[in-house]
Amino acid sequence: MTVKQSNTIAVVTGASRGAGRGIAIALGATGATVYVTGRTQKEGDAPLPGTVGATAAEVSAAGGVGIPVYCDHADDTQVAALFRQVQEEQGRVDILVNNATCLHDDLTVKGPFWEKSLALTDIWNVGMRSHYTATYFAAPLLLASQQALVVNTSSFGGRIYMHGPAYGAGKAAVDKMAHDMAVDFRPHGVAVVSIWMGLLLTERTRKVFDAEPEMYAGLIDTCETPGLTGRVIHALHQDPQRMARSGKVWIGAELAQEYGVTEEDGRQPPSHRAFFGEQTQFGDAVVE
Image (cartoon, rainbow, N blue to C red; front, side, top):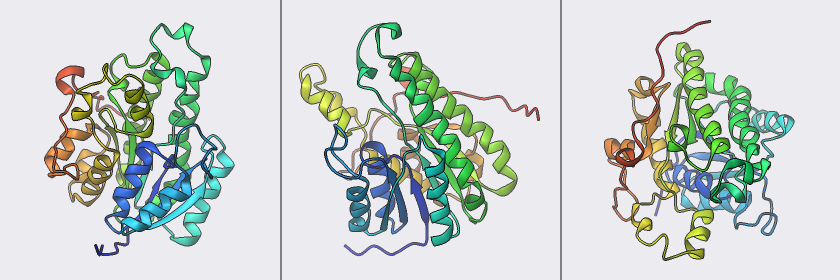
């Protein structure tokens, strides 16, 4: 398959595996140049499979240009260096996907938060804070683009009880952050959104499914692949009306339906609005 090379410059954080990996590869399939960031340099460095280099190679194999950048998003100096590299090599960023996060193994353990590890709060550093710092350092490069989009990957956990208060607070924060950043970016034509993904078929999810297949039987048919989110992001970036969507939370499956985006097998994953409710709505007032 020959993919027409685009001139889109994207940065996808936390893309060694999981949602970031799938998003990066899907953007690569559009011909984009994708900077793939993460901490895993070689197999075995993390309990789950996947590395920054492997994802970058898959981006290139899909038809784009994958550029691996080792980056610990808990370290501001490394994040600043990442965007200095992009500045020197490209001069702009067209799409920034803030996806880096820290998910402790206790995340899906049942029980009250005080019986789980306090390390669950690490999602506030690599997750909430890292979304802020990546966008902070990327801002001059986003302003240099004629068509810039920032996406915070999130979930219904920003509005309902999901995995406990540490996870919920982190997701609610990145949703509100997208809204507030959009206010500052609006005069410059930079769109910022938060996208609620459904249950994703990632390495972590498959591990949970494989451990208790009977409990999760049937769920797999309602899952989304991370690639769907990547294709939705591409469609949103190409939408001439994308600024009308800026500052809001969107349900990824519903955006997919609007844009006619499907899974590679043609399946249209369902929205979970019926189970979890409406996405968060923010007020219009601006107090400076």
